[in-house]
Amino acid sequence: MRIIENIAEMQRLADAWRAQGERIAFVPTMGYLHEGHLSLLRTARQLGTRSVISIFVNPAQFAPTEDLASYPRALDRDLDFCVQIGVDAAFVPSASEMYPEGFQTYVEVTGVTKNLCGASRPIFFRGVATVVSKLFNAVKPHTAVFGQKDFQQLVTIRRMVKDLNLDIEIVGHEIVREKDGLAMSSRNTYLKAEERPIALRLSRSLQIARQLVDSGEKDSKKILKAVNDCLTAGGGASIDYAKLCDTETIEEIEKVEGPTLLALAVWVGKTRLIDNCVLGR
Ligand code: PAF
Image (tube, rainbow, N blue to C red; front, top):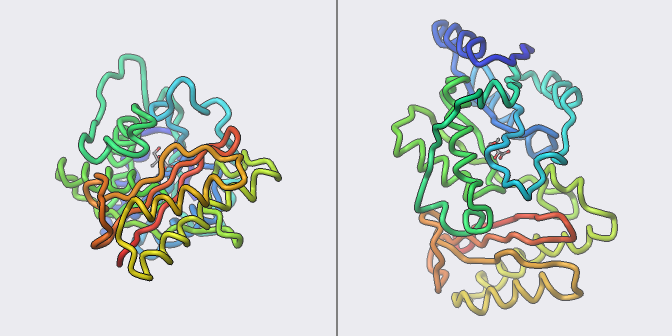
């Protein structure tokens, strides 16, 4: 596996592959890989003839109060996983390679980033859209795979690709869960043992909502009441948001009449967890 730290070198490799008719499939990550990332990488290997991962903890998507400094990192272990999976190249730029002195250009997707995580983390999607654009320009992929756990991120990237006419196919990958239902996340490592049962309420509340919708309930208020009750019963969880939204516009809806995103962000102690499902399909 090639390990590349430099943007120009990554571009040269991508150009050489493209000249040989290879199809490049890309998985952008912030590292500390878990089974969710690994399944994105396996999918990428199937979608392309060459697969590339990027591992870069992107300062531009963290607010000063957030966990940039403590974000878990394990580069050697991550690279071993990538070799085992058969990834062709790992792009691991430094912050100064990505954001050199004088950097002043950002990509901003507006409408779909207003609600949910965009409301709680105002600079987050600007940071994501900017870094993903830069990573796309470095890796020059034909296709890129993103997890659906970050549903709003996936919608934002699709919007950006469409609006900027980027010639890249975006593939969404279903959420990968632990055996107990917890959606896989690098941040799960922050959870203390006693917080784990509280964290499980997220996936449990999604199931409750699904059962309600499957039995004919359409009223958002009733569904969200059941979700809120499940999340808060027993204490220890503080809801950032629990909302039902249109899957494309990410605007709130009052009735579940077609595919509807149920999106959750919940603080369990000092850890902010997100999870979601699409109801009504
Ligand atoms: O989902 C992530 O890990 C990050 O937001 C991404 C897409 C790698 C951009 O930094």
